View 1 (cartoon, rainbow, N blue to C red):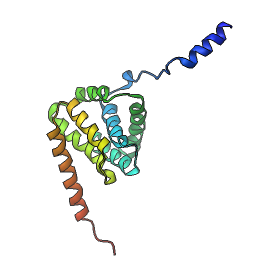
View 2: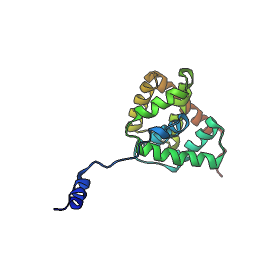
View 3: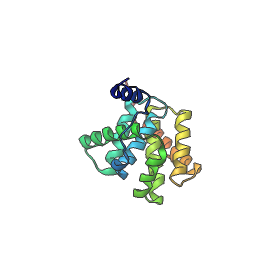
View 4: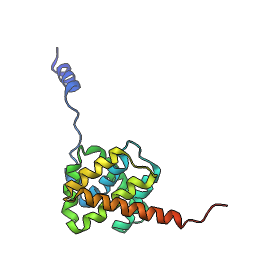
Length: 162
């Protein structure tokens, strides 16, 4: 067997190498990637949740529609390449002081609840994320309740269809 064939066979069994995204992780991209992870938590990357991500990015970073879409696209790739949430939350903690993190939990819940549904996987992710961000489950529950109340209030203010 030639060396070339042997290397080819070894390549079949070698672990696939993913590019190291650590150098590309900025606080802004980590914030966006965790929003994407929240939307994907139940394996349904819903268009309503995608739109909610763009709204949050626009509000949080003052971006226009094109810049939001570009940051979200980058975040989608980063989220897919990042195995666990620890790496993302570590970068987020570098840019979000502790007092600003409850507002970020509200952003995450806004994305999760944008499709009008709540799933066990999303609840589990939020328990993990709130802990990794140095917050309590109670902080996450308050953030969720705040978002749900705001969504109900917005529904109540919509004109009835005729």
